[in-house]
Length: 305
Image (cartoon, rainbow, N blue to C red; front, side):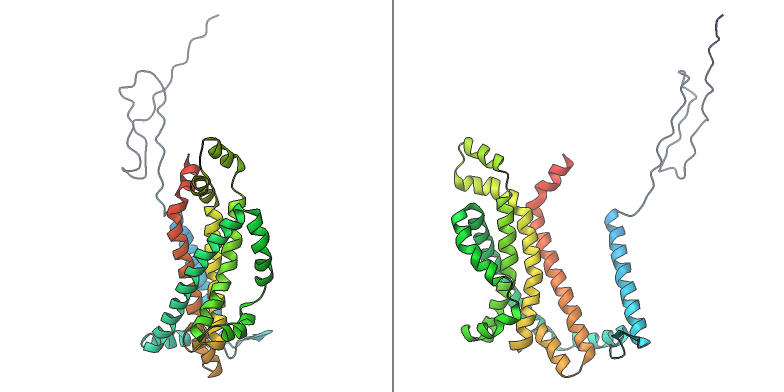
């Protein structure tokens, strides 16, 4: 018994779509093969992923400001006391007043100058020591004990000794800031250099590469992710150490601005100083990451490959 083949029914004349740009009509009038036309995939327009993340972060900040406004206006006093905390509107008004004051910019300028000098020295000395310690066990045995002993000492504890050793208050603040940024950079550089693949080093040496060529083309590129992480962490610690020095021994700077506002019982200025410190620290860390991103382009290219 023979079975009669079943014929296919032609597909609709055109495929419906939400817009003419997304999907073009598909016609089967000239199709003689009997195959069913497959509709084109509809593209859905949406915001880029980065914009979505920025919107979430902005919404989180808005929620925090609203919560701050509610607890300060209602003078909530449940374990944490908010009756003396000025609300965002008061702080915003005082911030506008400070923007018209020349001394406010002078405080910021002094802090930025100290950060630039101290952080620049920490980057040069920290990366150099980290590479030396990572490539030489003898150098690591000589330098590491000093780092492990000095690293846990807080910045505030260095202030009396810095004042005694340094010729000026500015030099003492720069010295304290330098120490704060130095240790994270050194330790992360050592970690990155030591984690470099020994197989790559042996392969480069077998091809006749010199020690300097291995350092430049193998060790440093492999250690860069860890070095960049240390630079970002060091920037944050540098701001913390700077403010500790400015609060106690400074005459200018955003740390001195915040501390003097506390002594004069000017609560809105305290919050302004704190927010400016956070903004400047975040901005400096972002600049460090963006400045180092071209050096890490090979990571993204490798991921795409």
